Length: 150
Image (tube, rainbow, N blue to C red; front, top):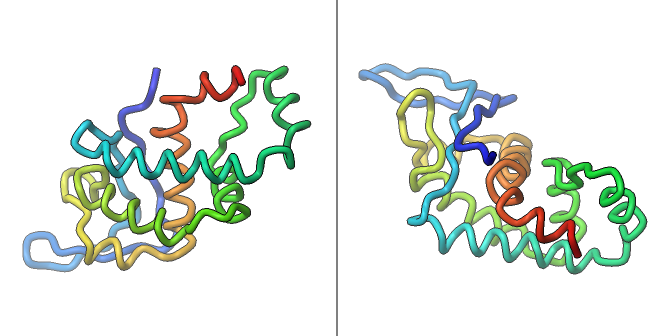
């Protein structure tokens, strides 16, 4: 069964306002995208698939081993590595990811919607990890079975 949400621990906290005072946030709550996010999630999926396509052949042996062992080859770390090694524009992906997070898919627990001001405080390392984990938890499960059967 696909997850509907998960917690993400920030290595570098961000600040937000709550009740007139500034608070520190060390954790984000990520929620699965809904139908209203489809345009953005489709672009993210397509870019990830392009990244995999551009790496095709370079990991044929690993793919064969993975199919035999039934392991998920799409860990957050592997996803980020594939994106960085591909010719896909990571800046475009991060722009789309910002739209997704600031439109109902990311919260400062329990219910403070992440906005651009918060997003811009997220460290580059946290954002890269967050992108990988989001794709791993929400976008890959929707089509992983089809990929593994190819």
